[in-house]
Length: 190
Image (cartoon, rainbow, N blue to C red):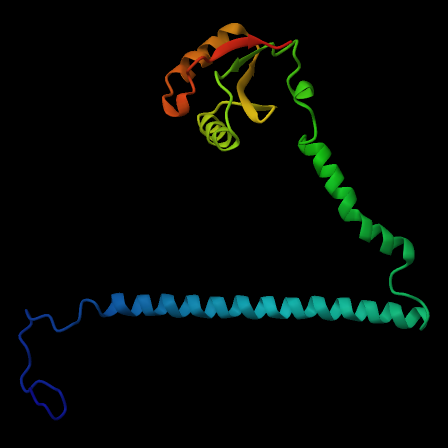
């Protein structure tokens, strides 16, 4: 090999592969990376241009309305201003009505359709109530918590039939955490 110009002094035999097998694989990755970079730049530029167009149009519209109406005319009339200020309270009221958070359990589960619940045996403290309710909820049970003086009672259900309640009671009796199954019983809602 001639180290001055990097050429071979004699030609290589034809069975010797002179090409780099990874050359094209490296160049395709470089092209993909370059294409991704160019694409990301174009997306950023188009987003910036679109945002500037929207801002310019809105500003032009507001300034045009202001100058067309005179110096004493406000951009937004009083009725629209008051409506927009009170819309958040109106929407929060509508969302609460739709979500059903404020509805009582009796309207969700009427006693004549769902007459049975399972009462878990003892009364729990507030921290134990949270743990037990979270555990039962994670197992897929509907949990009802009621306060009695300083402690809390936990119920699961309600259920339409007594057989459905018995099936759930046998499932709950297999749980060993928090002594849930101790003195658990099916009761009828009054």
